[in-house]
Image (cartoon, rainbow, N blue to C red; front, side, top):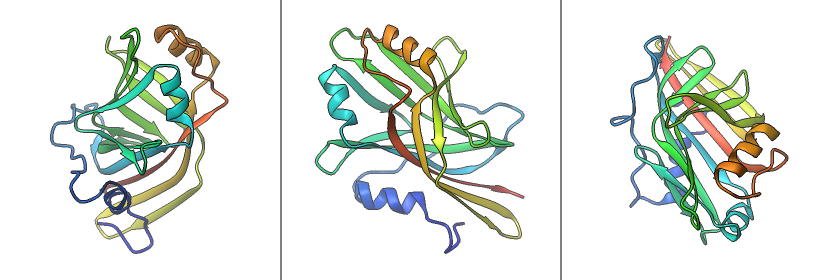
Length: 200
């Protein structure tokens, strides 16, 4: 499914996480929009140096919900999150799983369910618990885009996706929701990669 010119996110994650940790599959992902077409692949990101330490100092914890995973990297100062891709619609790529950000002291949390990555609008859109959508995160830049076409499929790898809080309004929302002052749109909190394959 992947060509030699495409850097495989799955292989990279396996190297980081080790063979004992299963990578996510789309088997239990929520249904994508009815207008979307099936797709496969992985959207992943690694938190930047010092991010988890700063969040922990402010009692902010982050976790992943099945079929996504979030695991420590190296000494645990960073974390890797991975979400299976289930569908696409134009430039929107839909994933399964969730990202939960919690104030460990108060119990307040934000749950980003089934993140959708739009590589044109440069946002990561989340389904919220009340079933509304909120663009919590923005893609500040995309480092490289590598397409690969075969007779039957299209595969595209996006690497070097710098992720930050979408804007000041969203930062204020997150800070209020979690009773903290931790979040700012000026900080790149993670760098991501996305590899998606779908039928031509």
